[in-house]
Image 1 (cartoon, rainbow, N blue to C red):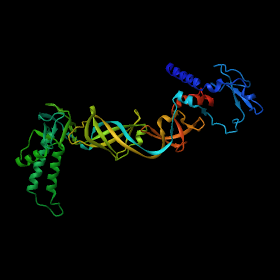
Image 2 (cartoon, helix red, strand yellow; image 1 turned 90 degrees about the horizontal axis):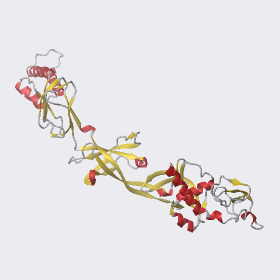
Image 3 (cartoon, one colour; image 1 turned 90 degrees about the vertical axis):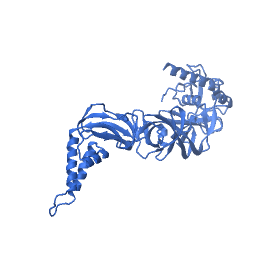
Image 4 (tube, rainbow, N blue to C red; image 1 turned 180 degrees about the vertical axis):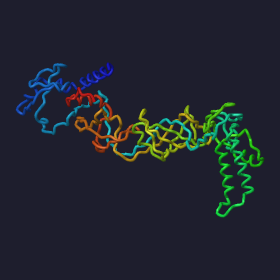
Length: 419
C-alpha cells in the first residue's frame, strides 16, 4: 500500500509539474477584468483539486497556486465548450510526458496464440484387465510390467479361481451337446445347443480367459487349473496391481493397457484467448525443452470444460502419436495460428481501463485531448477491438495517457475517486 501511495503521489506530482504552466501565469482575477469584453466568472477553483472552490480569487490552500476562474461562457471566441475532462497539452508538454499518437483502424488481426497443454490418454483407447471371479495369482509373466509394450493376446498373468473350473466344465458339456445334439421335439429350436455353446464360450471370455486357451480347452477336453489372462489390445501397460500369490476379488482391475498411438492434449485458455480457438483448429506441438517435433493437434468438437479454480477453459485436442513421443501427463507447448475477422481496433496501450469501464483519449486537433468511453471486445496480438465509442481514422493517444488521465480526472473533479 505504501508503494502504491508513493507511485500515486509521484504521478500527481509529475502531472502537476507538466500542467502547472496553464495555472502559474494567471493573476487573481486577471482574466475576469480583461477589458470591455470581460467574461463572466462563475467561481474560482483549485487547479490541482477542482473540488475546492471559492467565490473570490485567491491562492489554493494546498499548493499555493492561483485559483483559476471558471467562466459562464465556453470560450472568448464563442467556440463550443471543451468536453468534460478535456486536457490542453502543447507540443513541449507532449514531449515531456512522452505522449505519442495513433489512429483508430479497421483491419484484420492475425498472430500466434501460445499456451500450455497436458497430454492425457485417449479414453477410447484404455483397456482394463479384470477377472469376473475371486481368485489368486499363480504366475506373472516377465513382460507384464508397467511401461512395457504388449501385443493383443500376449499372456500377462496366470490365476486360479473356482469359478473358472465350473465355467470350463459348463463349456465342455455344451461342446459335447453341440456335437451330439439330442432329438428335438416339434416346436423346439434345433439350434439351441449351438447357442448354449456360444454362451458358455462368452462366459469364459468374460471371466478373463483368452481365446487361445479356450481353443486349447476345446481341443484337449481337459479342465485347466491355471488360467492365463491376456492383453485385450496392443499398447503399453500404464498400471499394474498384481503381485505373486496375491488374492483378488471379483471385477478388480489387475492391469491397465493404453494404446498411445493417438492421445489427447488438454489446453488451458484464459480470458480473451477462449474466443480465439474453435473446434477444428490445429496447433503445432513443441515438446519439453523446446524440442521441435513434426506433431500437430486438432481441436476436438467435445464441449470444453470450465475450471472454476483457475478460470481457464480446458479445450481438448486430438493428436496422432506414431512414435510415442507424447507420454501421459507430459506438458507441451501449443501454438495456434489465429486470424480474426476485420474489425475496428486500437493498440492495447491506448485503452485506459478501470473497474467501471474503458477510456481512450481522442485528439481534437487543437492540442486538446478528451476522454472517450468505449466498449471493447477481443484482445489479441497487442490490439483491442472497439465495439462502440470510436470511429475509424480518429487520432488517439497511444502512450503517455497515464499522466493525461490523472490530469483529466482532476479537471473533472473525481481525483479522489478510485475505481
